Amino acid sequence: MGLLSTVISCSGPQQHIDLLIVNGKVYNGTDAEPSEVAIGLKDDKIVFVGDKSENITAQKTIDASGLIVSPGFIDPHTHADRDLNKPEIAHNLPFLMQGITTTIVGNDGNSFYPLSKYKQLYAEQGIGTNVVPLLGHHEIIKAVLGRSDKRPSPSEIEKMQQLVQKEMEAGAFGMSTGLYYAPGSYSQTNEVVALAKVVAQNGGVYDTHLRDEGSSNVGLVNAVKEAIEIGQQAKLPIHISHIKCLGVDVWHKSDSIIKLVESARAKGLEVTANQYPYDASATSLNAAVSPRWAESGGKDSLLIRAKDPKIKKKVFTETKKNITKRGGPDKLLIVKCDDNRFLGKTLLEASKTLEIPPEEAVYPILETGYVRVASFNMNPYDIENFMKQDWVVTGSDGNTGHPRKYGSFPRKYHKYVKQDGVMDLATFINGSTSKTAKIFRIPNRGEIKEGYFADIIIFNPNTFKDKADYSDAFQFSEGLEYSIINGKVSVEKGEFTKNLNGRVLEK
Ligand SMILES: [Zn+2]
Image 1 (cartoon, protein in one colour):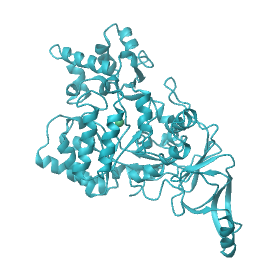
Image 2 (tube, protein in one colour; image 1 turned 135 degrees about the horizontal axis):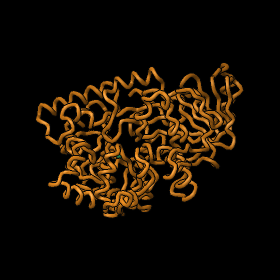
Image 3 (spheres, helix red, strand yellow; image 1 turned 180 degrees about the horizontal axis):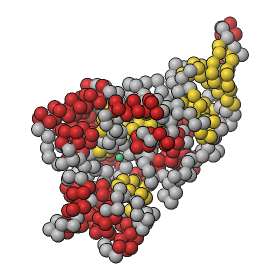
Image 4 (cartoon, helix red, strand yellow; image 1 turned 45 degrees about the horizontal axis):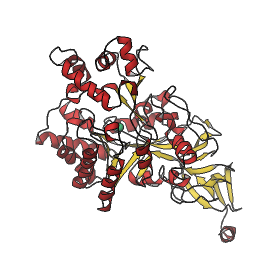
């Protein structure tokens, strides 16, 4: 191979490129083994992968001796869109420093709407990573039905379908749902199918936060069945976001979930999932523990019901049940709250401060504003069981207050590849790059291959590691030496170059 390519290139013309990466251990995103090829970039593309020939001259050469070269990571589930429209943090550094070059946004049913407006904003203002936009189911519901739990009429369904069509035409890669959350939770399966069919006609993907990840309503198993049924009926690929067994009631159910997914896949259905490598989930305090019916009309209505002498007892009783399902008030850590009396405390500690039971304390805490909790509710058995499946890819669900926003990909490498040996390095890289690109139909990304877009990262295998934890969730990961996005250098020798090289990607 070496001799042959040298001979060929000697007879070929001189090639001038922008950037050459040499001497690295190259994982190309699909193969099981690395190779020691050189990689040449010109403009925004990879133009050369092979043995370096003397006929190549490059403006700049990166010597990657002792380092790992990989396609840039693609993160299938983020809430980065909450940062990207703020110019001062549009660099997307928490993700960028993990080696992520493309963030999928608009997950859990929530997207910035309408998409056309945000695409224009990102283009004008610049963004630090690429963006793959999804359309959020909640936005469509809110536009037609508001936040109430009323059922849509046939003409309202049609109206929603038209809005879905419009967003798909504007460039959405698919639709996300958050059927656990209001108002998505009020939607019945057939109503979701009606909208998913429009997504399918446009070649899109269905990404879902399941109706139930534990034992809150229909139960985890039924929620997975519902997702598969939506895929079957609407005829589109199903992607389950942040797959998990949430709460003691469903611990060790990963085996049955895996069987369900495997049998759907055997029938030809495309069912995949993403997962973040942490044993705590994170969500708003009300979504975690308040009964969904009490939220009809929005959070203000919830707070009114929690004070209503006729209703509050029922609200508290159900809140208490939900707290128990999540492992108890000592397993809920308040990670975002404007009131410093509660921030950094468990719900149990906060309730002691207020001198009322935890299920009642939830409501005065919610009155201080938007409150998020880390909820310690997962079991290592299920985490590793899901992680080993070849249809499960890495995701962060990166959201403010949880360390996963800053550490997911390096943590998976450091803990699950290096320390615990749950998977090898190539499996981790392939499941963080090309597989994700295929699931979301992202063209020409996720591999180191001639003709592909030049999204490449270089990290130090000895130091690549997450630093964020629950006590300080805002620490950048370390060990990333280079990040190249669309052929331009975004991180050089571990430092952000301050160039915003991201784009909103096209289908
Ligand atoms: Zn979610």
